[in-house]
Length: 255
Image (tube, rainbow, N blue to C red; front, side):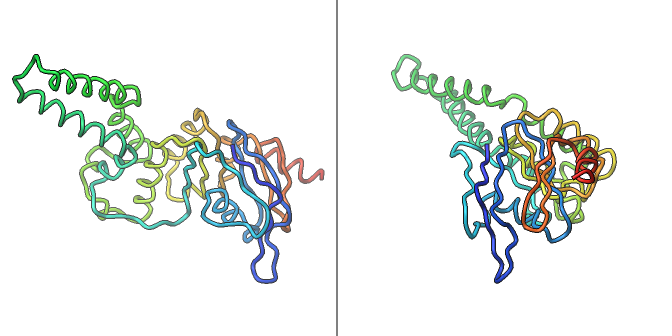
């Protein structure tokens, strides 16, 4: 899924990473751990393609979709909560508009036997089939389910995003990322702005997710419940454990 190969990263005269290598497999649930300043956030950025290593390579398949959630981001305030979450389905929304336009055109025409009319029917049918195949019949329900899972109430859906605090707007960004269902999630402290109920919902979502997950979190219980592999960053090197956080702590002590 993602291959990190002999990566080095230098800041001035300081070497943050020293020839680190590992592979993220399609169903991995990896917790990135280490002391503050060890480079956890930097490594996520590099895996997301937002920062380049000084040496080495980070290889991601061309068709792989990577979903990255940083700790902070630029938030937009021009839509309602539901409309902002809906931008996760921009392709489906465009298809929906095209289908509506085609159907309106069909409704106003009377040349039922013409080739043009039959071509319009075929275009509408093909587009509708593709729309349904991509989950177009259920994406509105998925948006509602995800927003409610992250703590929003139905009456919040029509409120402008600028009515909410920064923490709640980060929940909207998390919702958008979850709805996109990328092949791999790169999550930097995803529970920072969540309450207990929302954290439990997110845990269940990630445990049942079909793709790979790499996450940084200070929440040890969350790491235990979601991950099955732990990569420790220490003094520029990594130590890879096929275990969740609690088991990793035991193994590290033995090491």
